[in-house]
Image (cartoon, rainbow, N blue to C red; front, side):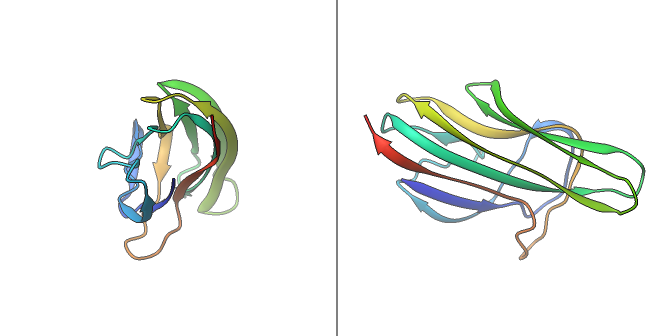
Length: 128
C-alpha cells in the first residue's frame, strides 16, 4: 500500500487539498476526494510538502488530519520571497476505515499542472 500525489490546481482558504495527479496508487486507497482510506490496519508513514503562493505578506497553514483530527501541522510565511514551503511527516497507526488527508487552514497553496511543487504521499510500514 503506497501512493504519491501532486497538486495540479491552486487552492485558497480553508479546504481539503485536492492532490489530483496520483501516480502510483498501490492498493487504490487514495481516492478522488483526496483522502487516503485505510483497508489494512497497521502503521503508516505520511509526508506532505505544500508550496505557498505568496507576495501579499500572508502565511499559509497545512494540516495532516486523521479522521478530521489534526495530527501534524506546517506553516509557510511570506517574508522576503513570494514562495515558501510548509512540510511535515508523521507515523500513524490506522484501523480499517480511518481517513488521512491534508487540509489547508488559511493562505494560498500553489498547484503546478505538470510540475509537482506540492505533494502528499504515504505508505504502510507494517500491518497489524
